[in-house]
Every structure is written in C-alpha cells, then in structure tokens.
Image (cartoon, rainbow, N blue to C red; front, top):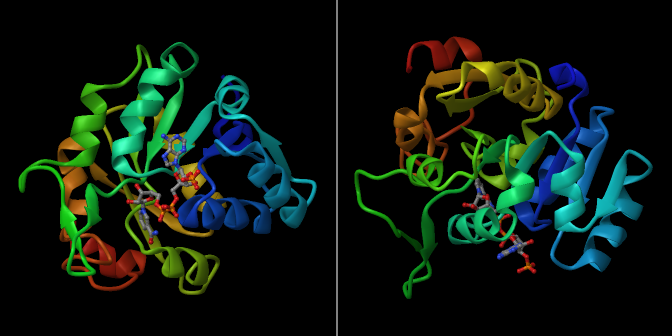
Length: 217
Ligand SMILES: NC(=O)c1ccc[n+]([C@@H]2O[C@H](COP(=O)([O-])OP(=O)(O)OC[C@H]3O[C@@H](n4cnc5c(N)ncnc54)[C@H](OP(=O)(O)O)[C@@H]3O)[C@@H](O)[C@H]2O)c1
C-alpha cells in the first residue's frame, strides 16, 4: 500500500456529501476519483472540478483506489458491500452515513435501534479484509463545506477498530481541510453519528476546535 498522503481516494455517490468531499479534496490540491451510478453525472461533475478529478464507474473506482468513501445513504451501503464484495476486499472503507430516513412530518427518524450505530452494523457486513472507519459524517454538508480550511481549524471526529488505517483516515480528513480527532473504536460510532453527543446535529450543536473537542471526548 502507498503512503497515506498519496493513497488513491474514491468517492462513491455524488449527492450532497459526495460533492462536498470531492470539492474539499480538489480545493486542497488532492486528486480524487469520483463515481456515481450515473456515469454521466460523474463526468459532468469532474468537468466542473478540473483535472484533479477523474470520473469513473463505481466498479472501476473501487478497483483503482485504496480509500473508498461511501457517500450514500446507510441503507445503500450494504447493497454496495454486496454488489462489490470482491472488489472491496482489503480496501479502506469510509462510512459517513447516518442511520436516518425522512419521516412524514418533514423531519428524520433513526431507522435502527436507539442504542445501535451504523458503524457497528456496517462493520458486521464488511467484505473480507476490508477495514472500516466511521468518518466525514459528523457535520452537516453546509459546515463540511464552509468550515473547511478555516482558522482556527475545525475538528472532524472519526472512529475505527483498525489502528493500521488511522494514518490514511487522518490524511483524508486533513485533505478535507479539518483536524482529525479519533474518538476510539467503532463501539464509539454512535457518539459521532447524528443525535450523538459529538455530532453537529446532536449534543455538540456546532463545529468545534481541537481545544473544544478535547474537553468532550
Ligand atoms: N447531507 C448531509 O448534510 C450529511 C451530513 C453527514 C452525513 N451524511 C450522510 O452521507 C450520506 C450521503 O448523504 P447525502 O446527503 O449526500 O445524500 P444524497 O444527496 O441523497 O446523495 C446520495 C447519493 O447516493 C447515491 N445512491 C443511492 N443509492 C445508491 C446505490 N444503491 N448505489 C449507488 N449509489 C447510490 C445517490 O445516487 P442517485 O442520485 O442516483 O439516487 C446519490 O448520489 C448519507 O449516509 C448521510 O446520512 C449526510
């Protein structure tokens, strides 16, 4: 595997979060493979981003990259694990998902048990040898865009059971314009998912600096 600061990153899904992460990376001069189930969407968005962005099919993106950002809804991640099981083996998988779905009142409801986390559920479904980090999901899309590369820098929390991928995850977060702070293993995922005590749309309520984060973890 290459050094973390040169690992190839692919983003799967060019919805709101996928586009923000891709822009953050390109703004920080980092190459990125961008994939969507609609290849034309990936080609069009790559044209907007410029030469650092390479459009791709989902399968080719997973084959080519070492770090795969699953920028799709929680329910779609397991579909992608199943569909691309062989290609995902041994990859570093970044899961920004929040286990919520729109309700009939115009809001969102958690769609798994109160004490469950998307991180732990997705970890139980991982393709062979793949390593999972819960990351890039602790802020809403607006903050993920506007708080990037600011001073003082804002934190993005992450969780993983695999110390061997800390460096790659931290490099990805830094290349997004944030400071990485590991909260622990995937059993801590619930804290950094929506409604959690370390999520912008939970008890945290806002972006935080490293000094502010230190008092909370
Ligand atoms: N938006 C936020 O503020 C925010 C913040 C933190 C974390 N997150 C998390 O980030 C993830 C993405 O959220 P989002 O707001 O970016 O959602 P979004 O705008 O609805 O985009 C979702 C993307 O997933 C793609 N997709 C859905 N099912 C798929 C499948 N089976 N195979 C391949 N692609 C599929 C969609 O493709 P189509 O366009 O073809 O349907 C779309 O590109 C979610 O898990 C969410 O909880 C979001």
